[in-house]
Length: 318
Image (cartoon, rainbow, N blue to C red; front, top):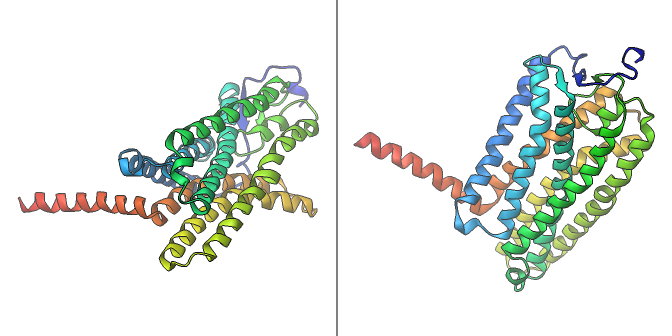
């Protein structure tokens, strides 16, 4: 600490993986996961954007979630892959702070995207006759734009705090750049700076998460009132898909909060593990869920593969 006091830090060294022995194995796992995330979300984006029949509010929201997942996972995965596989541990200050910005922007907008999807399903089931007049493509785009605008503003404020503090050690003990890792590397008492982000995170954890759970409780009640078995099965399938996506995003955050509240002290390795799971599991599960459990996307995907297969057979016959 004394060696770097009052000196400008122009780069950071990522040391979160230094204690691990099988670094390449973990690096390959993260690389494979990241490639699957890109492929899965890319498929969703391509199928929905190229099919006019799928350009509806629900699928526009799925596209928004896919874009968020790609951004969210890319900001942390690229750092971890370069550290574990390429052995490049040094990241410049401006690269680190920009990655921090887009990482937390992805986290914020993912929470907002899940909220919009829950509201969309609530209106679709509770007000089916008025759904198409209430939820239009233009309104969906408007709400998505507002959530991104709010994300740019809120995360911009948070990053301006991280950019204003003095740094006296070029070492980040976490596995990638984020707000916590940068504040820990600064020459300040971190508690007041963590208090600011804790207040901001109260909205998603204490506001939006209970709200989304309430919407799905209402949906579950509405499903039990349906007399048509096929409609009931379809609604159950849709709601269960959304719930899986919701839990994959919130579960790591809730586990971390609950363990802290009951007095379990998380060491650096535990925190890094939670960061990795929170950053990669949700973006990996989301496209898988929507590809396999959304009938229209599954049908379109099957048509593409069957068309390619038939084309290959006809070429062989010729």
